[in-house]
Length: 498
Image (cartoon, rainbow, N blue to C red; front, side):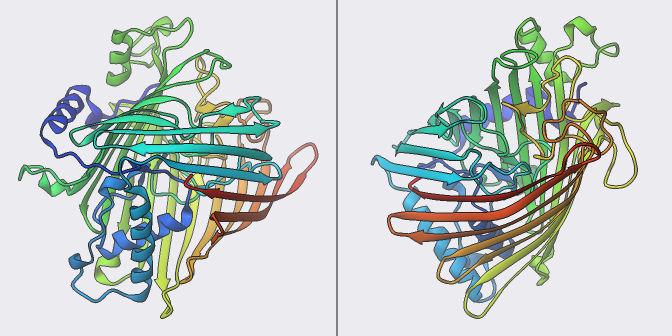
């Protein structure tokens, strides 16, 4: 099944990338990207963006460190205590990231019970025990991060890993890289319908925009700060179509402080015994991949998803609230995405006189195609495909919503950053897994309908030579048949320069 999203026509994209590489300025910094995974730092950045101190988009990760330039002079009022504390923390991270022409060592040790089945934005351990080291270096044009980990008794039988590594070169205002890095596309705090850090990252060639400054053209400047990333990934051989390839693209625009819009598209294509030519990729780009409609079954090039997300905030008029929605289409009708996966959320934030800040969010997600949070839909369709039957997954875990297909979950969460830089996170998630699926389908979380409940409490703080993160919680899966599983989750990780 294919999705054609007209704003992503290849000619326009290639032209804009070529133009930007030639004429946009170069921005150098020690670590090109801020990876997803730190919920408390994300809260600080969103707080500054909603206040107007930070102009860059905040729904596309990794974020470019070269674009994180908080400027309090943009405000027409004095900084509040919570904004001062958040600004200090972000600037401290900026100083650490922008160390040029020096090798920066790092290390990480993680231990705990089995990893979370339904995983959110926070970078919690996926394995029982992992240990790793890293070296990062950035010059004026080149950047390298070498990471190595060993996972004891790994879930996917891959003990040695290079997750988080990259090598990149700056070309004007763009970074071209070979990378094995986590991604998160969308405004959700618990999940995204199209790309998350739930599964391990896969190797990819990526092109990311460094600075999201607006167009100079008066015809396009109204789009405000904008970002674009495209990536060509390489998947594992242990798939229904071995060594299939991944293509993804996301464009984010921020025409006003109170509005951010993202357009995302991904495709699984190529692979063993499947068409893999340049013409085939052209069919992927143009959406010519609906067997029996615009292409024959033997030439069907791949499986695609595409959609949009919108985040609206009232911070500009003094209301500390935001709402967001994301809809991702599994199929295409009349050149537009159809059979939507839907996610909706509400946020509220605030601060205390001490400088401590908090964010509360409630998020609902429905991964039943056409479910739209209410009513029925098409079961066993989303995240699946008759040819690429391993689906939208990598090494056994979903790369999109961590609950996989046909789920409906509601999450309530809290982020609390104290003035002493210690940070707390709490989440509670409940709902249905695989709620209309047939027994034995491709769902990687639950093979049948099941009730789900998960609660967690996390804490981060500086400790000695690094940062300590501890998470404790509980997960329960109660299937319609079979035994209920009740599991306590505990993990601790200590890392520095990671």
